[in-house]
Image (tube, rainbow over the protein chains, first blue to last red):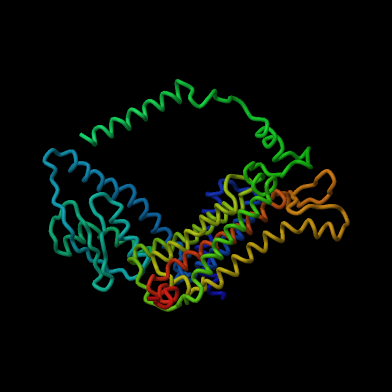
Amino acid sequence: MVRRLVKAVTPGIVAFLTYVVFSGSIRPYDVVTGIIVSVIAGIITAELLVMSPTKALNPIRLFWLIVYGLYYLIIAESRAHFDVAKRIINPKMPIKPGIVRVPFSVKTDYAITSIANSITNTPGTVVVDLNTEKQVYYVHWIDVKAPDPRTTFEHISKMFERFIKKVFE
Amino acid sequence: MRKFLTATAVIVIAVLSSVAVTVGGALGPLFNGVRSLAEFYLLNVFNAHNRTLTAMSPEAVTSIVWDYRGLDTLFETVVFYMAIIGCVALHRGIELTKRGSEVGLSRIVKTVTKILIPLNIVVAASIALHGHLTPGGGFQAGAAMAVAPIIIIVVFSRFFLMKRGVTKEVALSLRSMGLLGIALVALIPLVAWVTTGSVAYVMQNQVKTNSSFSFPAYIGGSLVSGSLIWYNIFEFLAVTFGFTIVFLLLSVDEETVRKVLGGDKHE
């Protein structure tokens, strides 16, 4: 039970912040009801969401998450947008679409999902399926440089995986 | 040709009717200003100086729904309750097995859905707990909350939900607790009548001209609008689990249902 309460801390905090933002006010009424509701939501979802509570509360992981957020939104996204925009504007439309295998070496659900969503959210690449036993994503790529796993990993998910491992693994 | 004629006819009718409404005044003259009925509510829903007519809530819709025409809403809730009872009765004898293969969608979809569940809970709770302050209320909050079981059933499976304790029986009892709560809040004024001897009415919220009974409009300095917050909370509970029961029953496969409901073949 104590372990479950510790696990409930992270989802509870996220739930409380969502409650306050959604309610749009932070008077005593919102704080009191928010705490009650967040504690309930946190306890209900603790076992589902948190495997190891120390990992979830580790500030170093949180730091890497922020670094990754900045890298992703500023560098990775801009690079991908420019690349796709160039292909659209170019009258020859230099695309070479195809579905390729991209390997991954992470184990946890959160890491697998983060990398997959990072790939999908950048223009030009979309994860269409994954195989957790073979540890590969099937990615639709706008410009297939080469179908072998090393090239695809190098071009598509190497940087994402490097950061995500520090955050979730 | 036929298609062309139909399209022309539709366009002509659309243009003519819009001209008739906007320029020709086909709907009669527009009413500018506030009608006397609206004026009454705007003046009285939150009016500390006129305690016999106010509902002590700045949200006019919730005030009307749970105070001015509260009995109407009570019967609406009963209709919803009857609909769910009907659904449960239709599915009598069908056993909702707890075990089965949990395939569901991909790991990615499952992980994202998991993260959304606590957020869904707090957003729905916020709609319910602010029902007397901002648009929303118990029913809307219950409908928002019911999104959680339906996405879990679709993304994971019914068994995932049931293994974690959300069974038909649990949902039925929680739903009944919600309804019982609504009934109790409606009857509390009568308890006050019996104990203090002062006249009080069923579903009364604030004081009336011949009744001194009143639910507390403020608790600890925060506006709770008397009975309105309690109705919203219990309605939230009743609607959430009402929908959950229906979703659980609808997720039973057709063959299992037919085996029970089909009965014997009559030649």
